[in-house]
Length: 426
Length: 184
Image 1 (cartoon, helix red, strand yellow):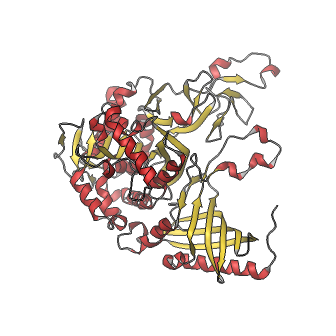
Image 2: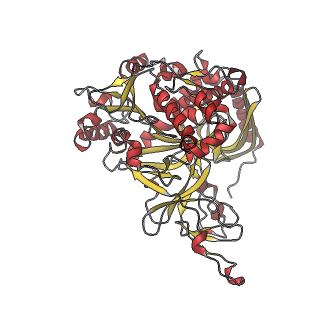
Image 3: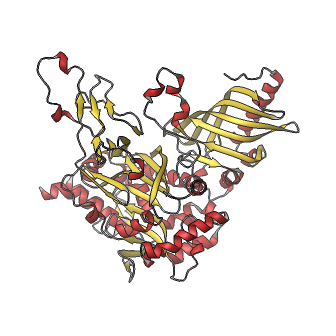
């Protein structure tokens, strides 16, 4: 397998085999080498305000319960009873002191400790309940309210894993006083396609917009021009990326304040502009000038900045994605403004969005091409703009202009390294 | 339990209106469909999730209330869609472009509308419940069924019904159709 993986992705990421998106064997290996080894997004702290609050999540194919325990600490445990494996939690979210397995009613605390076996008193030998808790996710760390977990106990600290990606995350998640919060429950839908394609798309493929979305963008030719002139994709560390426009220091805040558009009523405009004017002082003058487009965190978390949506691309076989998409809004915004901001997401993205309707169609169509084994000797070309990426005097990371695919080359180079990882070490 | 009308003529008119609406949508006449909408239309598709059972409501119908599973509106909800006329017009007009790639080729759809219940609200307004089965076929053998119910408010404007409000409730928590951006 090792030898064949080497040949699937060129070392510089410029060519990626179709099999990377369609092979069952590679998919199985990904579960071990990508999803068991990296930091994965689990939940947002705003969903777990009180002790006993929980939400369910997935780490690759592994179902987990993320909860705020009685002591206030955030924990995550695998959602499978230690007795016969049945999921102990069947709700998406809630508040509870106990999860009860339906099969024999073994009961677990919200932190995953086994607290009761109803049959225990009816048998003679005692059971060591301490050893039979739900298996814990060994590492949990948070940044800007985002909770990440890793199944790899030896993984580097999250801060190091993110590196300079934190700078771009902070520019979004701390932009508003009081930070951001998740609204409602995630929209989940099962898409045909490979989990890596939506990730790659939202990592930095800003150049697809004027083409795939021409039916929508043709009405605003200025937007395409602005994209080509100003938009950049920055890779602070291979696998992560931020796409954004850096506005000039004297740009009119009304031209880029987060959430603002031509339809915003006066009081909403005032609120959003007031916040924008404080960003330089609360964060930094450089972060204040960022008009963000998307953020991507390796391996499968994406944020669409202007459309207020956080999403995870969960793998469900080489040709299936369970896509989870959340609405994320400023926690302290007035209620009526929150309701108005909601449209920036649901009209365009999510299962009912007119832009994502086109994206998801393209992602499912890509799978058809990836399954043509006769073309296994014709890898996909990822070389656009190769070598044109550079550094920026202000922004941390490697910067490429619109249409430079360096973000994807870096992603697949890291994927290749991960997939080779264990065997090359042993 | 609220009582629906037994006015056969009224029920028949409402059914005929829905059949015609379904035919317009299946024949891809989305622009003509827009004419069936009241300009003030509110078109809502709530999100749906699996909540934790509420032990306090046990032994009552509230224990299994469908509403607990829906995210409709308000600052804590994230409905799948909350469209007004403008957004519906965007959706209706988009497919008629050469560059509307998600409709190239256009999906083949067939809508079955059943279980129509009509409740008069006032002189010209009606609350109407209906179920739908939308068959969706686009790419070869990749076919999908969308099943759900609609809760509408219709208004009789000079003998023609107009849709003032529509709520579409689907029966899945993980959406298995390719898109919810369709006109239900």
